[in-house]
Image 1 (cartoon, rainbow, N blue to C red):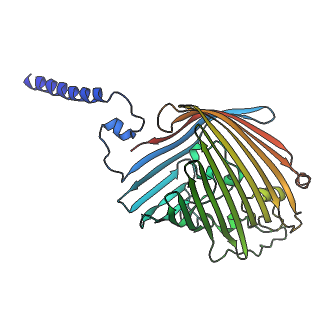
Image 2 (image 1 turned 60 degrees about the horizontal axis):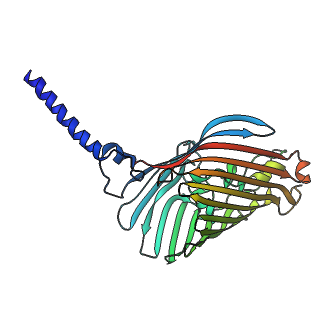
Image 3 (image 1 turned 180 degrees about the horizontal axis):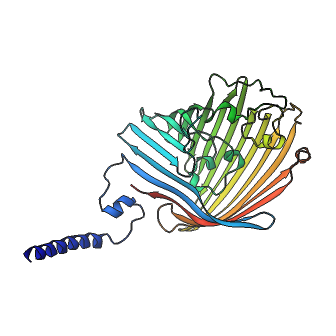
Length: 395
């Protein structure tokens, strides 16, 4: 009996202590990691931070009328990063809804991994990042967290964005930064990247991978009083022996109080079709992706924070896909012009980036006569989505 009374008293005291703790902390703090909320143990170090990046929605799809409605987790990425000390940091991010197969990958990493590397701060001006990382291409949409994108342009959608290599950053001033980056030019094998197959006569095309399949990028990030910002870049990529790709991106952003807007200009000139859009139209008559393609993309977006917790936006996209020089019975000229038009409203209930949204995404694809001869037809797609976006702080 004494033991039972002692156990009841002990349980009561523990319950009292727990009640005091929960009474002190009866309100969820939006900026506090989930670990601290559940354990009431405050994290006192910046060496390890864990996030879950999410974008999920219910999507209604339309093409010549209603097609289907479904729930979709468009983005689900786990991210860990931290500062080990004042000069060493790290970052790791992986997509949980993409294959983890690394077979045939040039860097022995699956494409599900976005980041896997370390950062080194040499001094206040120079810094390095080594490992798998995002290409230092210009443009403001390209630099956003993928969970914040409702629909990428075709230029970015069909681009290899995360490769392994080295980035050297130089802070000219606190507001002006230059980056010189050298990465692998591809993730997968040469044959799979450029569609190397036997032609109609059973011959393999005379295309060989270069000895240094790398992409070199020079990037400038400018900030002028937080009103006007730039993200410009120029890149040259070795696609194959004696074949290169040249990519230019000019991103410009304007911030005026409740208004924010950016315009991104992008152009890609490819000796061998890297995007694959033209190849999907003309085929592979030579047993490889088409030669001499050019892609132009203009993306503009405007945000209006009409209330502290409410944001409205509109976005437009204009893109062309062309052949810049006739070869292998493929005619020179424009083959496809596409438009994108988006609008939406976002609600931010907390100080974090958690927000709920209602968006409309429309796409139009117009093919020229030279593409229609090859069987292409104009079409439009529409999508209405209701969902959420959150970079959830786990630890």
